[in-house]
Image 1 (cartoon, rainbow, N blue to C red):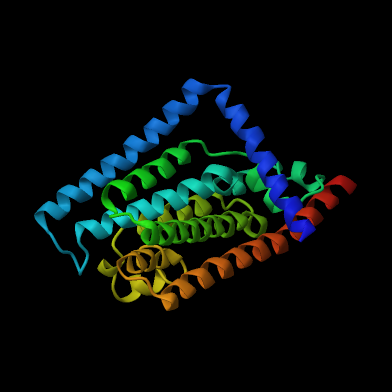
Image 2: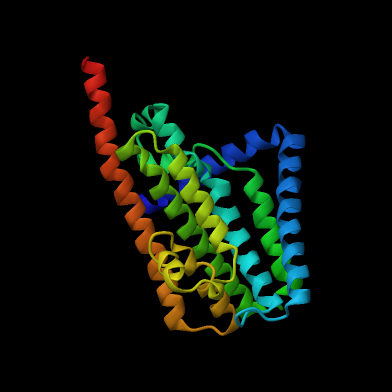
Length: 264
């Protein structure tokens, strides 16, 4: 229990310092927030116009897409906002910048992920909250469900990003592959899940697990089910555990390589 409290205090201190640094450049900080907010808004306008012409697509209505985007942008914004290096972990590995975190006392992955905040993602988080409170028919129960599924969605995304970028520990120059996997995950997660069929649907529940994001959260917001919520929770935590394990195994190869180079 004491160790968990120390970890929470450590994360909180890191976030406080990063926020103070961000606010030193207020114009840049707020311009990035506004820029991402506008970018999300453009996509939502596209879907609004699309559903004006086609009111129902594979059982999905405009309200469902609004909820999907609210959940996705809040989850993405919360997790990548604070764990910004999840989006550039392969770059740190390939440039040898991971060495800095190896000598620090806390967990290497946690330190590395917290090492940079992705400020534009806060615009995503703000966008998700506004969309939900404007169009999500909020009440206390729905808001609790919305926040819970958004956190689980963010955990799934960041865990997958860690796995994708940790390929650099095994394959060397895999940054292009890692970035493509990251973009694919976010891209497929923004589309109504039921439009994918056959092999594409299998891929989106295995190799690129976007199917758990573009289907389960919306289903839970339509009608809450402990069974579906349990599946989403299990997927999120198994993926997080798998990401941590995958990175840890690769890190041993990275450390060994560095030791050989130092001896040389």
